[in-house]
Image (tube, rainbow, N blue to C red; front, side, top):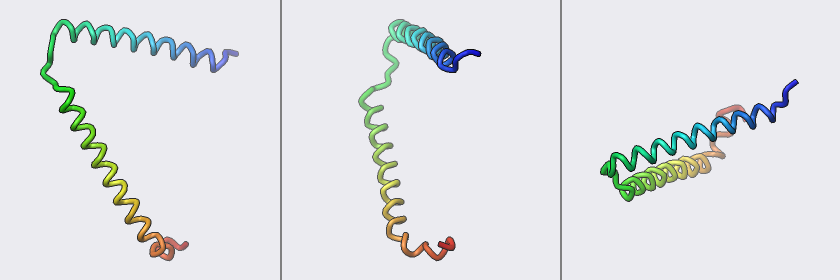
Length: 78
């Protein structure tokens, strides 16, 4: 019987090799094609704004749930 750990190690090795190959090809393609015009600063600003918006929504939902927590006890039979 083969060890599951051996299978996991083999899968990880294959995945790491594939990832390394993909990163090498991407780096070569980036140097061959040059600048694509995508500004990293604008990308960071967009990602930070999206994360901040998601945190605000989650915080608002948590606050609304906390405020209504005592009022929901009878609704669900609790």
